[in-house]
Length: 270
Image 1 (tube, one colour):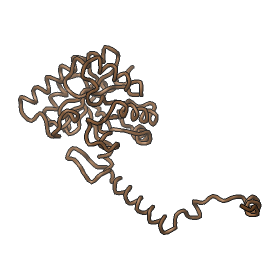
Image 2 (cartoon, helix red, strand yellow):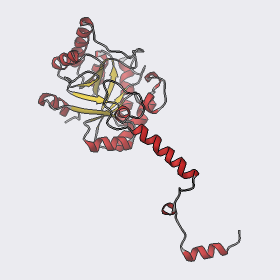
Image 3 (spheres, one colour):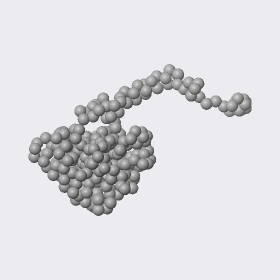
Image 4 (cartoon, one colour):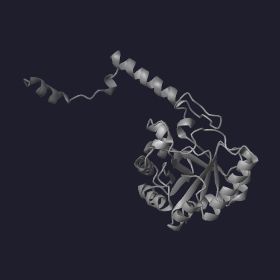
């Protein structure tokens, strides 16, 4: 059984699918141990971890590097790897680059947009596919709500149906009305994973840095479960204070020579 088969079962049984982004081994390990169903190595790594200005700067080498790290941290997890901007312009290009992401350790490859031809090419090569509709961060410069008009919403549903017919295994729906996400989820067999798409999708995904509160910025679709950013800053300040005040290292942090070896060492002239 493929790693995606159980997500279809979860959809049929009404069991929500929990997805989080992961970019490194320790985070992947923690998420897997917490029971996260799918780890997503998304192009969000660029802005959240690599200091890039946008998702467009993320390279295939970046994604493969982080997929390998996540796989080392969570050997048994289901992992989605993003295809970066301009790496799936044709079905042949998408297939060649998807194989590299799979070789790096991903189980599923994700790309943006209603490209049924790409789904067919990847599925034809036995590669599981996660599609992405609504806000497409790689292609939409303005990060705004999508599917607000009846016409735009209807087109989104039709695109999802076509991708479903082509054989996708999962569909991410980003920043669309809850009503549109609900209709889309009902119209297709593949499980839907929402981010800012309301409560009626088959699962949810959030960016781990947003969940942990790495920065003061927050989003309406997010829920902060910790304030790690503040804790990191406080810990760094405390460390600087201890070093400058010479209270670190303390005796508990020091290693000593054995007494007899120390006596010999001190007798030797430099």
